Image (cartoon, rainbow, N blue to C red):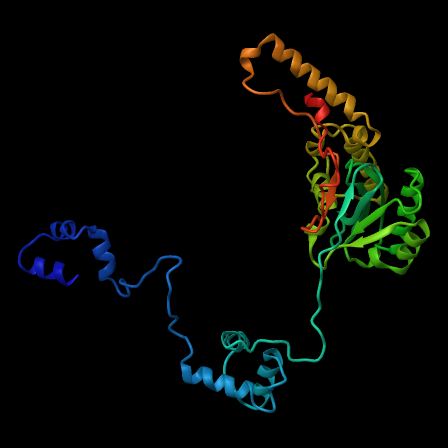
Length: 347
């Protein structure tokens, strides 16, 4: 900027001077503005103008490590200092200063809550692993909802049980899982049932029913919807179905039950599921999908024989993975499951 100023004072044109220094005139004009020479790139390293000085940071450390406050977290320390008429910094500032000097540790005798990832489960056939959850169904009264209980088999994606109630209760959940086990003829120690950590899922009535049926319970981590992906995906399909009454909403609970009955029939018997190579959950559940996919494979092979020049590689692969995992982890060894995919369709 000094060179350009000298050049312009000597009679040179600004754009010529900028061109010689390989910058644009617009860049020079931006540099001439107030704070124009500061690096304004998104990831530039900047020093905030209101940053605490080293003396102020030392005051925070001295107070935090003093006898009256050394066993307290900043969230309790700040209001106590305010009661005594002192302010050394905000709560977030104190947390930041302690983190910089590696003093942000648990200060009480109680242990921190540790939430481990739930156990991994593998389903190689139907009625081995189910997941379930509860979602809201809107009513015409603001703040009032109906509760849809829904159980899905992760192997076939079939809805094996559902019910709609006006309250969320572990008693309703217990009746639902019992009826679903009867409908699917589930025997003892055959099934794993995964759910969230809601009161209905972990209620005493529900847990007692699972123990009676010989069903192994499994639970997600708190506030971690990714641990229950199959139910979450099912509810998204339900809420985005073209007949779901987002604006009209449900008037009576019988209306909600009638709509859910139609949706379950459509989902199980007509919905071509993308994760199942576009066969219905009912076909996958009953084993009818094998014949359907073999027929599709045969159709594609015949089309390739008629016009081989149109096929540069093999025909479309209609096989499906024989195993379905729930919350897989690094310790899960899938090598013992031989022939993970159904290669017989590509033979």
